[in-house]
Image (tube, rainbow, N blue to C red):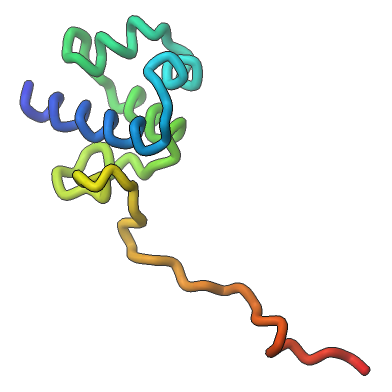
Length: 100
């Protein structure tokens, strides 16, 4: 169980670093004190699913990225879309007919 907690905490840390945010910022976003966030991330206090949901929303990552050992949050420190790249649906202005 401790190893799972460390793994989740590590992925939260990766997401935080990739966004350039601190534990203080995260705490403000999820309505906890910075001390409580630190205690949760260091394993002194358990992280609940509600905590993970709040953290994922604050960091704008899928909650699965925080839970999965094969998450998109990898050692590259860059969160990625777990479903692959989204298609570019932007219109090319040269292709849009213009009314005369």
